[in-house]
Length: 162
Image (cartoon, rainbow, N blue to C red; front, side, top):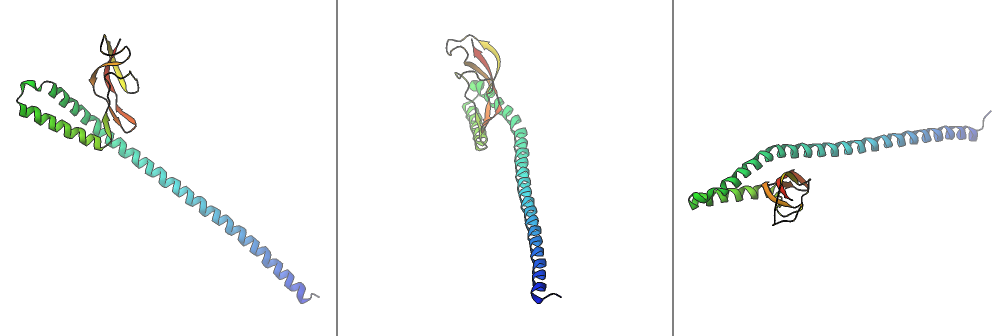
């Protein structure tokens, strides 16, 4: 026959093992919760990164053709000497406004003439003899290049001094 103390110990032992089992299950569930939370945070960051990349790519698709339009302004300004002064002033005003708009988006023109040729920034389409710049430097810029933040949006087309 069991004494009341033995009955209490056995019941206490069952309760103790049940408590340990429940605590272990709670710990596992908490670990799963933390992993799910971390996975969701990583997913959210990846989606934000992807969304920013797609937006930047879309902007790039719009900006590149606009740079060709700006090139047309540059060419028009080279031949404006025969036009009335008001036409030249109007073209310059539109060009300045255009450049300010690009700069507001973080797009800046590359300064190439006189700079050392850099294949990451320049697209060499020929060489030229020059006394004005040293050999290996950009002597002529045929098409202006642009930088977007730290990235080269469009390399400058240049001729390099021999």
